[in-house]
Image 1 (cartoon, rainbow, N blue to C red):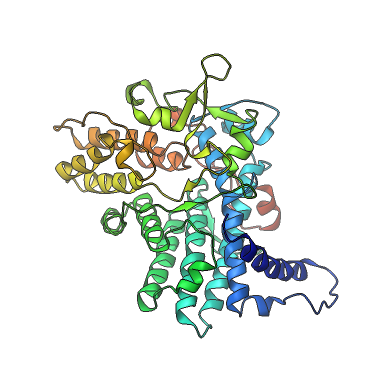
Image 2: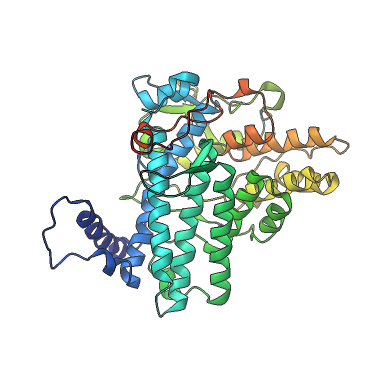
Length: 432
């Protein structure tokens, strides 16, 4: 990522706070920042905020890799390359083979709760700063990762914790989506009152379009929660010409490439069907197949990761413009505005790579009119699966669109043993 010097300086402050908090014995270090100092200064708060992005987007233990991986195996997007990778092997098998020992799920759970906890402290600390424009940036940026983390918990688990601690109660998973919407609304209101300062923007990694990302994540959470009118209004607020990405460089590598693409020892794409039933699989000339995967004609596996896991420095989108358009299509279809839903769907179906900010283009003939609501929703699901391949969202889509259970290997995930061992209120694991 860019601004590596600033990030390391900020992270050093945050790390100093974490080291002090984690020690059993307290040895005073006059050179280390205290927790109060970190969370009461713009410099310290920025360091923690940047660390939220790193925890979410970097490395095999980061949220992004684990969300894409857990979703990909569960929904048949991915092919296991080495059964010795036990967490991936569990998810590839599915069913009861997935249990509370799975470290991929444990990473999603632990990262989400850590990010939510630290984001709340950043937001509270930012509200005390005198520079309200800088504070606005801190609140908005931290909220992006809080929202992503709340949504990741809601996507994979039947219940989400109401807080952090040993005796925390749980709520229905849809509460995770509504909590993320509430947090986003507060951030958008803060930005409206005090525009984000240029100084803040210069102190965080380049790539994320803050306001568009907040609206995109709001639209995502709303459609997942079944609030179609809110999803449509939030989606309409997103500028589809803009990109918002996690950026990578020679030191901070794209985690999909680093772990899977480059090694060919963890997973690769299943095949050109992208794991979809034949009746709704992508047409063989759909441009998105060769965007998301390359084909090796001589050495197995034939289908290999391309797209947003193609190279060490390939940026990974926080959301795709195509996702937002398909949210509009779905919201309209579910409220029985089928003509306008078809118009939005066909914007994605006929889109060329040249007309998409990320180069994702299907270049297919338009879907014909005259479909029933259920038929149109199936086409929307189909194109979400193709357009958003390896984005980490298909499991939620399968449940929401009422797809057959046989199309996935689990419906919801077991809770990590670490949570169960430390919280007596942990709910029972779902049967499937």
